[in-house]
Length: 220
Ligand SMILES: NC(=O)c1ccc[n+]([C@@H]2O[C@H](COP(=O)([O-])OP(=O)(O)OC[C@H]3O[C@@H](n4cnc5c(N)ncnc54)[C@H](OP(=O)(O)O)[C@@H]3O)[C@@H](O)[C@H]2O)c1
Image 1 (cartoon, rainbow, N blue to C red):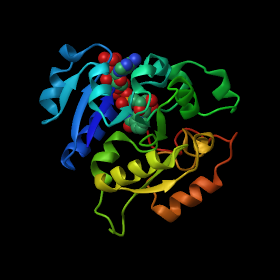
Image 2 (image 1 turned 135 degrees about the vertical axis):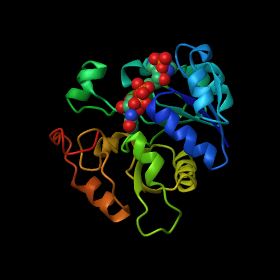
Image 3 (image 1 turned 180 degrees about the horizontal axis):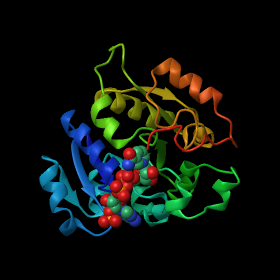
Image 4 (image 1 turned 135 degrees about the horizontal axis):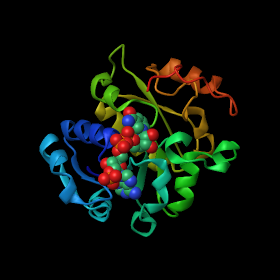
């Protein structure tokens, strides 16, 4: 599979490394252009680098791994019809305040999906630290295999993501549609805590919409 990645930071690079190791083709991109990514190209053997537009055109799947504040810069027309993996989280201290999120009226992934009309957005990779992605993967059936939550409105796109996670070494737990994806946003019990499938299901069920766990309850 060809995976285009928008954002060549911690999470984009970690997913790139895992995907390459699993036999996929990868292209990383950032907003400043491939001429700024020589260290990425040399650090991640086998990865291609390109512009955001190149990565979108390259990818059968496209990962959005940029600070949430910049989500409106993603090229909606080019992404229409694509499956877009959404790793983004809302950190008001980094992203500035977004009122609809502060009022718990929407989710980060719904905002992205509204911008990316025609794309099939699946929330995934947001609730695991980049460094843990590189160490916590296990073969299918391993007793200590970690599960990651996903959410999306398109069953076929979610099935693609479940398959990809399995290849990368993780179980998946379906957290529902994008409107329900608040259950594993920042500061919820499933956020950045290593859990197996039953533990993750319990953490998703336990989440309360307007209750945020204090900083320090999750790893960051
Ligand atoms: N770090 C983690 O462990 C982790 C885990 C799960 C989820 N996340 C989430 O994933 C997202 C990215 O986090 P990160 O830690 O990987 O961030 P990061 O290390 O700061 O990297 C962000 C990357 O996005 C690029 N970028 C920024 N604005 C862009 C735009 N408009 N178009 C294209 N590329 C752009 C940046 O490069 P340029 O500025 O050069 O464009 C950089 O390569 C955040 O929403 C974060 O909350 C992070």
